[in-house]
Image 1: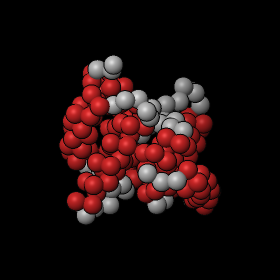
Image 2: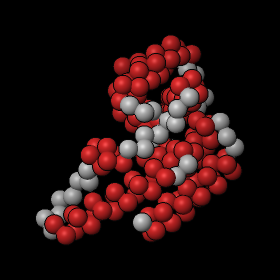
Image 3: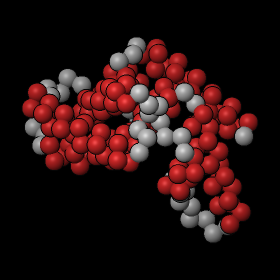
Length: 167
């Protein structure tokens, strides 16, 4: 049986990242994370392992954040590109300044493109590519059919490519 401490250590960063992406401030994200992990703590004794632990935790997080968004009447995604640029620096060991500038420019273009995409596209991209969840896990977390996950992911990737190339 997993202890809460193990679950928290494993999922605190990904849950924080999801909360930060879907709330308007770090304070809101912190409050949301606290509520999410209280729910995880309360639910852990009943976790039977029928789903992967990551799927279960992300489902709790997603459901809480979706309810939080409805309650606050806000758009959940932080749209401040300058803040994203300050927080998400690209680590590049290459000494070539021109190469670093190109990589930084590409990261900024991707972040601008992501900010312009619909939330459901950003979220499915993050869950698949950022958190490496399977299509089945994403379907469970978002409570949508597997085909919806596949189509959203395909559309999101195509949209991201078009937006980055157009910038």
